[in-house]
Length: 182
Image (cartoon, rainbow, N blue to C red; front, side, top):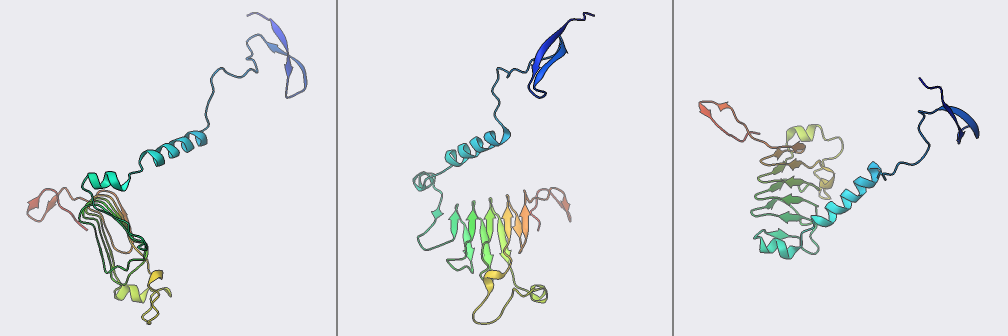
């Protein structure tokens, strides 16, 4: 093995040091690397600007889009339905036949996906575990009630969250095949 050494300036120590000939240099590499945050920011900007769909192009595709002035609900898709729903509770239904049923007009229900269904109820158990949120007074505090979120095809949420594809591919009684369950 050769015993050839070099003398190089150490930025860390602030003086000259003796190193092996095999030691790497303190030069910048020729490649320029972008940090993960930079790549994430560029990707987010690209997705946000690239996916925006105008109401004109949605109308040309035959998709019903309803975002009305003064109405805080959003309905996008064919056959979307907001039942028992005030016009200002922030419900979002996106996808063909996406439905939201708010029995006591909860705020902020979200149904995204084909046949996604959110059913917000107010039953006996909800009254027992009310945690100070439910009220029967005329001033109504329904905006404090929990709202459901269903994201995915055939999903069903009842005052909770369900994410994913909701199908059953096994035997159900004497039938075998694809069934929706929930």
